[in-house]
Image 1: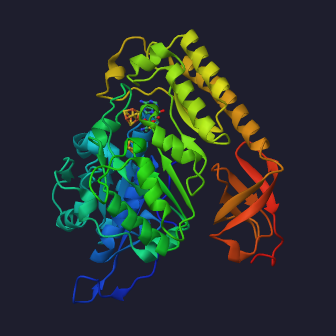
Image 2 (image 1 turned 90 degrees about the vertical axis):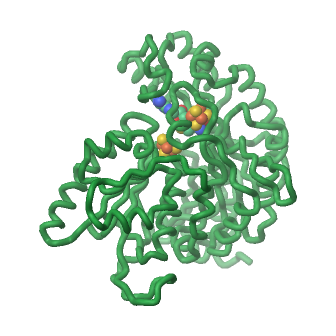
Image 3 (image 1 turned 90 degrees about the horizontal axis):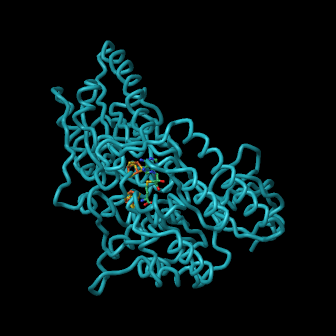
Length: 484
Ligand code: SAH
Ligand code: SF4
Ligand code: F3S
């Protein structure tokens, strides 16, 4: 799952002060403001959206900056040390803001949500007494109640259990207006948690046991998103291809089955999913990639290492030859598929030979894109205490070499698209006048000039003219005015 970007909070928040009647109250109240800053993976982005939706009926509108907000929440990531440390430095800044506003008689509630909250609830309370609320990824449906209680002052409330009730069943449906403001692509969490316990990873501890949402609930949520203008949905899960949610007529559905059910939704143009584990890539899902339809030819399939010895120490439960054979079968079903991956360099005990094997694998597969990270020891995970920790300078050197190979593959993939006509879904406005940016089926960013505004949010054929390291450039295949 790509978690390399820090994503800022809401972009299109309503900033007006309004007097209005909340949906569940008979009296007029001043609407309040909430700012949620999101770190980490796409699942946190989705969770942030659901938290904002959960607060809306309680009188909260989202705003762009902490300075404007009555409630500030950091939705955090614990995957690597740097991700977690960012939270504490942000809390330092927020403390100053909170103290300054207190002088003006303005009370601000500060909350920490997400994976750092789950893993380090008590430490947050100790290191950052300014925090009023600490809650994990499985309890945010209780946010309205927690905020109401925190408003009374007193010590920080901590809610980091893994409750028996399903939070999705307690959250309001995504709001039409909010979703519209968020654009033409959307994330939808279908599966959560992980039972795999890779020895480097915190996710099984922060997100808990694997759980799949029922097909009917997901289809209902997807319909609402499409009704609000969404054209592309990315299904999310820490192990999304292990999906096994209740099927509408009994039994369990595979991810392939869920994708076919969602593809029936009229108005939905594209489907994607992330992140998958190689071991859960079943024949049905491979076949789904070969079927014409809405599933895009892109697959993120983390391998982590090209050495069997290291894969075993990581408890990845697959070998290099298993992975390469799988890639062969996927490419047989869908020859043009864009493959992506995650790599960790400098796992404890990784020798030069192990690392060379990783370089070999990256060269063999020729990924269209990939993320690579220096191993970061995480408290409580088995690998953190192992002998043979690799020195920082060796990790840095290996990372640079691997990234050079990955970049080469990515550039080659992008250059090979030049001259092709690709359908592009325009989902962002560029910096130039009449420039729109969209995604190709392979998830590349495609920049196009002189695009009529009415093509925003639509699929258009684009002739690819340039392939760069991180994007493509092209022109509309049909001149403006000739579209039907
Ligand atoms: N469920 C996904 C992983 C989500 S975490 C999967 O199984 O692929 C996203 C990525 O972060 C992982 O694929 C891994 O490459 C990286 N990562 C996880 N823990 C890490 C650690 N301790 N140090 C460095 N990178 C790590
Ligand atoms: Fe972490 Fe491994 Fe689970 Fe992925 S499969 S979330 S890397 S434990
Ligand atoms: Fe980070 Fe938690 Fe996602 S640790 S990568 S926010 S699941």
